[in-house]
Length: 236
Image (cartoon, rainbow, N blue to C red; front, top):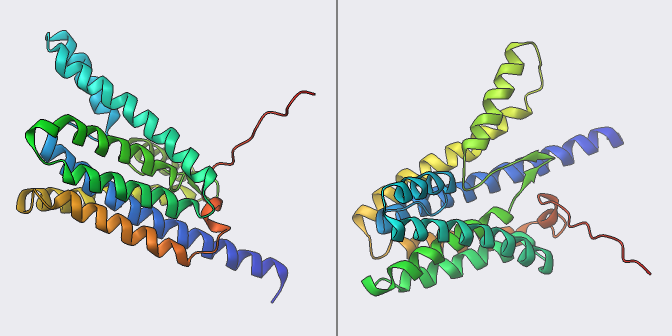
């Protein structure tokens, strides 16, 4: 086997593993988003929607609801930042991030009383922000896990270039998070309706199962799918 052929095989294996991870994680994200929407009435990962709804709420004089949604946006951003930090500190990045998401969802599931409505909502939002740090790209192609607008946009632009004669097919990978999200959302919608008290526990358990499965991956792969943290050189 030539060195070039071996490199192609390794690249294909990395890509296949990344696609499987994105499909599984986006499925969980879609499921959790649907469950969270049923339980709270607001989006837990669709911050574009929350931004628009907060603006409408402010215009309608519903200041309290607007501030709840603006708070969710801040928590989501914080979740993304915390996810990157956890991944940077952990040896097995994907496992650490997903295990943390599972813990947050478990705590949110425990807080099922009406008095704990907002803490539960923000815990789920935090988890959905954090999960984005699990996989950020596949072989250099950016991937979104909890939102699919960007994925659909990249898919559409790739389709446009294909029609114009470009025969690069890397853009078709963007369909994976959308398929995962829509199938997960359908499952979450059904689950939230049938088992509202257990839905978040099930999402937490499923997340933990995916996290444990990543322990079978080589340690190098846990950082292969993420952006490197580049520190500025220290001045002497």
